[in-house]
Image (cartoon, rainbow, N blue to C red; front, top):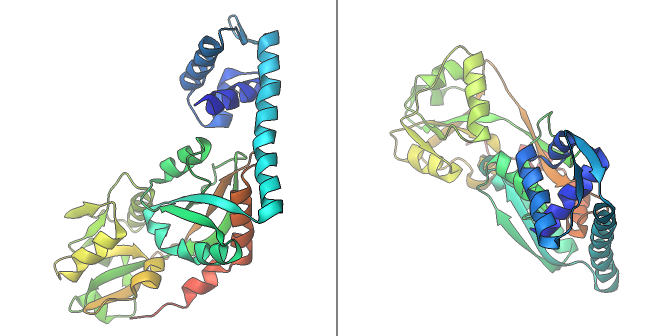
Length: 304
């Protein structure tokens, strides 16, 4: 918590404006103001000159900002020195949206091979907003999520692949006997889809709307594996990212066909914070991501 409060104070010193500092930290202005006030209470010194608008930091505040930057540099220096002495070690924390969690192994496999002293923890059921929040709050080192245009300069991204969609049905369903299905045809089937709170579902709803239809799923879930399980019963169909065929293939008794009219591909990538010098582990994972052709690996998928 203290490190986060210091980060907000550094941002306020840099931006010289509460709203801009809050935007840079991807938090609300009240949250940033409260965090700075709590830091003042904990240190028992005034840090900000307050008036009708931001008027700068107090001398004590300026001094604390210097120490905050020194502490950040010290942590990075310690990690870097350890890396140079013994090789990279520690625990890498990766957060992923559920639709992309099946592709994480395409990065962790070469990463662990290159850095045998590092252990990896993967949280594969985060919403896209949670991935970004946990990056900001130092709860994870890297995230795999949708690459939106509004991510901004606070984050570094490495594009990995473009997510496409397939209609997953029981083998006896009519559209399954064709080489492709339309989104309008999919909307007429008894569907099991991701919940509306998830970015992956919002993407699907946008494509359905573009096709002039609106799905009415009977079952909703936050798990892609649960979608496969429901389709397996023969009672439902689903729309799943093509990347999950890399994990499950096309299970016996099911068919997967590309969805067209419209065809849609959404960029997915590795996201880390842009702070310098930043996490040594995150930097190493970015290097692995830049050297790994995830898109090519996902093209080598079974058709059925």
